[in-house]
Each structure stands twice: as C-alpha cells, then as structure tokens.
Length: 312
Picture 1 (cartoon, one colour):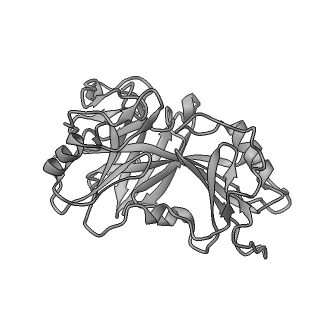
Picture 2 (cartoon, helix red, strand yellow):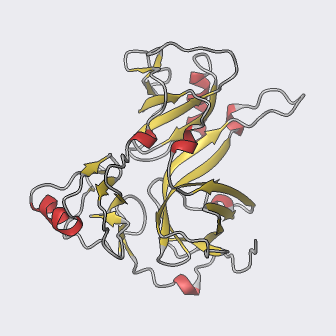
C-alpha cells in the first residue's frame, strides 16, 4: 500500500470543508442533513429524540418505517433511503437500515453477569459525558477489575462500557455476580467464543487516529463515505513466553470507527481526512469487503500501523 501524499498538513483536495457544520464532536452535521432542527442538547451534552413537528418531518422525509433512538445514534428502517443519504439527522449520527433489521442487538453482549447492586470497585474514576476515559483512568479500571474477573478487552462507548472476559482459562462466573457500574459508567460483560467485535457491523478497528476523540468524524476519499469515532478499546497483549504478565498500562489502545456511506472495492489508497482540520491522518484500502487502515502519526506521534476489519 502506497503512503504517498500522507501529510499532517491540510490537503488541497480537502480544503473545502463545507460538507460539515460544527465539524468537531457529537454536534457535527453532514451536508445532506436537511433537518430544520437540531437533536443535540448543548447544555447537557447529549442527544434527544425528535418530537411533535420534528417527528412528522422525519416521517415525510424517510417514510413510515420504525424510528428508534439509542443514546448516541438514531436508526430508521427504510426500503428506499433518500439519495444522497445523510450521515446525520439534526446532527445525530443516523443509521438507515432495511426493515426488520434490529440495530440494537449487535451491541448487546452474550452474558448476564452485570448487576447494579454489586459494589462499584472504583467509584472515584469518572470522566465526561459521551467521552472516553484517559489512558490512566483505563489503567485504574483494569486494576479495580483484576480481583473480580479475567479481562481480555475493554470497550468504552459513549454511554456504557463493555468488558470482554477471557475464555478457556477455567474461570466461571455466576449470573449477576459482577458490578453493573464500574467507574462512572454502566458496565456489561461478554463471555463467549465469538469475540464481541465480530458482532459489531460496519466497524473499522485501527491504531488510534490523530484527533480520534469520541464523536469526531473522518472522511474517506471525499464525500462518499465517512467514519465516526464510535468507541475506544484496550486489549491485553498476548505475553511472549518468558516475558511474564503485561501491565495494565501497556494494553493496546485502538480506535473503533463506524463506517457511513458507500464503501466500494475501488477505494484503494484513499486518504482518511480529519473533518475539523482537513488534515490527512491516514490511508485506507477496501479489498473484498475488508477496510484496511493505516494511521499516520498516532495522536501526533510518528508511527505507521495497519489493521483490517470486515465491513458488513
């Protein structure tokens, strides 16, 4: 894969940033988002559902399919989505999906271990609404969970945390035996042969892109597709024989980005552009339905890495 053209300077081809309003964070609005209202509550830093005339406008725009809200995105079922399809609705990330497809189930883990009455092991660890914890806060959370469970991966989403437990280690957990709140977030647990990330549709997993804070957008090769920083994961590296256990501060940190728009196999070596600044922060290919990303300058540091993730 060629790295030509990658630069931390704004790219001339992407100098026109009029495809987005409020380009940084959860209030960003895509150019095809023509809703005459905003669903972002700036004072409380959260989204709300459309109501009254807003709801009727959505019906007229998208038809009479199911409309459902899930905290940080809105899902509308339709057999004939408008073209070009907007990536947001009133500034809220928008999923347009076929009828009878549930946009909620793929985010739910396969276990019933969490219980709200089990004591929070680190109530002092808190972070802002709809944001990700810092690396140090993640280390505190992993340290607090260590006596309770054998953690393989932790995924921080805007409203809750997903903890994936190791399998094949001989440990068993009873239903409702683990804390349902860890730090400042509701916490759920996944304990199955199938990794939790295999259930999550349309995600790209890559080394942390520059500017990949919660809710930030990146364009992929122009206006046909974009990625939203959806979650952040920390995964325990497999220890090398003789090296011993890896410390919680050394877990691999990655961005999980949700893909919006049309992704085709013709996207070869296209730039990943940070919407706020127009910077080229990476490059991606699409081969056989797999998006492969190269992160250029991890969070402002020098470095290159790549990873593929299936786009459904």
